[in-house]
Image 1 (spheres, helix red, strand yellow):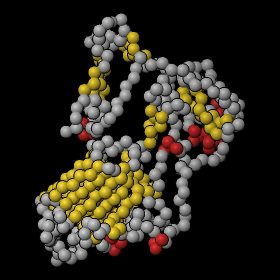
Image 2 (cartoon, helix red, strand yellow; image 1 turned 90 degrees about the vertical axis):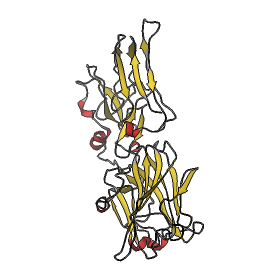
Image 3 (cartoon, one colour; image 1 turned 45 degrees about the vertical axis):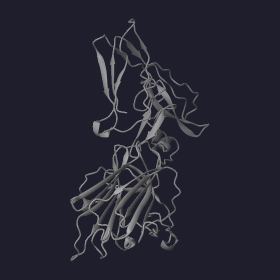
Image 4 (cartoon, helix red, strand yellow; image 1 turned 120 degrees about the vertical axis):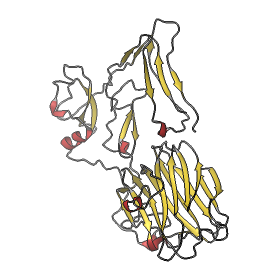
Length: 403
């Protein structure tokens, strides 16, 4: 549902909270709140627990020998040990190619088949001899799992390099997240076939995807979890399919486009994917019922992609106040203060936010930009208010179906 929230009435909104007081035993000396009342969240070291924990500082004076702006600073000063890298099972040993399975791996490691994309210029590229059997004239399938919080992003892009002397109309396959849905676009010549499956896929949960092209029946099939859609491929001949019998070299990009592909006149300008993708498998065969995975599947090139799926909320970068909920965005994190009675970037401020509305005044909030509209099954809102009027508009929310 798409929401526009508007508050119109003479009332007073008050958010109340109280500080969480814990007994701390830091180093050196106890934390001192000081005489002021600005209530800033700081960090101090606890000898008994051997870890840095937070406390509320008044904003002036106090014990400045054991007071830090972040947990990272506290760890550096008090333990002389810092590791902002999350737990990892990566090994420095390179797995031999003959021992690798059909899931995509990096050439230099081979022990991870899950990858994190957390920048705007990230991609994994597969091409050349490693996927020589991934030919247009054959039936083919791409399967993987992904998770993200963004409503848009390129998951997989497939193109071909046509050798000299071979006649082939322009071809491209896009698998993207658009408005929280999976969209598959098949471009061949002047024809474009699109298929949309699922909704609300940007809630940072794992989703399984399978996209299959049956060249004999000229059908495009897409499956997301337990939802499946299929359609006829426009422009594809059921006898000669793409009209090419010679081998053409495939180029597959995952998570984003390389600079070379961006210069080749890509039809859809799509934002890079931010999130994690795992278990990428490419399968091919003479018939859709006889598909075999390409093994081993090894990346030719990759940029700014990290092995593993790192949750920033489980690292020392997480500065969210205790009781709030940390939300991982892969390239950053935010703190959800809902239900804690705190506010601020890290949910560390408990001074009340008060709005006084006098009948003709109102506050309007836009939930998201129109292009980012997605399906939402649950929307929450909370507040405290007081008023002397019997009848007045407290909240108005407008929404509609996805179009």
